[in-house]
Amino acid sequence: MKLLDLTLREGEQRPGVEYTVDEKVEAVRELDALGVDFVQIGFPVADDRTRRICERVDLEAKTTGIARAIPSDVEAAIDADVDVVTVFAPTSTRHLEHVLGSPREAMLESVVDATDRARAHGLEVHFDAMDGFRTEPSVLDETFDAIDAEYYTIADTVGSRTPAGVVDHLESLSTDRSRVGVHFHDDLGVSVANTLAAARLGVAKADVSVGGIGERAGNASLEEVVAGIAVGEEPAETHVDEAELLPRATAVLDALGESVEPSKPLLGDEVFAHESGLHTAAMLEDPGTFEPFDPARFGGRRRLLFGSSTGNGAARRLLERAQREPTEDRIHTLLEELDAAADELSLEDAIALARRID
Image (tube, rainbow, N blue to C red; front, side, top):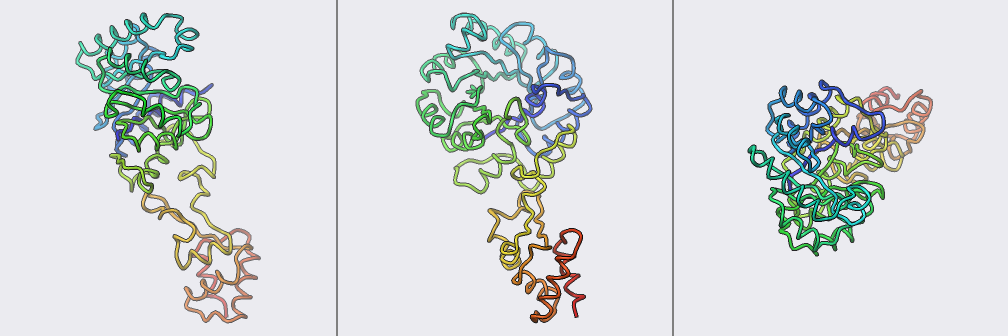
């Protein structure tokens, strides 16, 4: 399954957020090194930053720019020198009426004209169906049949779908899923689950963003989708370098001046940190006792912390690691020392402390 990263575009759709050219260039290079297939630079008609970024990068990934189905947007994308023009238009009845204000026939005519215009300039074309998961599958099939594009992305624009609905919708399509992409928002907190459900059905492409950054509640997190595919049961693969997943994702966030909550899956500072006495005692024997995977698989690092929460079992194992006989007196002394420490100690510091216990 190919991944289209839309961190740079969706991130800027949040109120008050705008990235500089330098920030985007650095982030794009990290994403390319990670191994994503497409990087969505931005909305070329809005300003010249997309063109300026494309002039400065030489990537394995394909650059994409989004365009409404109007000539000026397509011409701006062509002038920006992106590799792919992603033409988007509403497909649900509600969006046709209240967003576009035009009948379906007029929408389709404008999309066909836009995609043909882009193709005439030798560009790859994708079509994104806005509110596609609230559009009848038969209508989507008819729409896709009329449009000449490499991929047809169905967007859950308002984040209203759950995995069961995603499966039902995709299975009702006649369009070959090897040409179908998906785009999910996280308003219900299930964008990653939705993406994995789509991956299980063999969709060709998924839109993702680092840290789930995107408008409203965000989008499907790139790192969670990749890790979910890697350790889960979905019969899918990505081209991402697993060992670089977390370092590169963190570098993207740093380049853009973004941050995530400490408890954010995979990327948060606390997600691979363990302090509970029961947990650390068991993990000194077998880290997999309380971890779903070795963080090192994705370039992360486990942190076992020792302090006031440390129990007898963990103290005993620390003394054994320090090659000290774990007598009751030594265990008691070590626990007192850990409890008195100003901050939790790392595994290395806790072992060093254990060595000093008489």
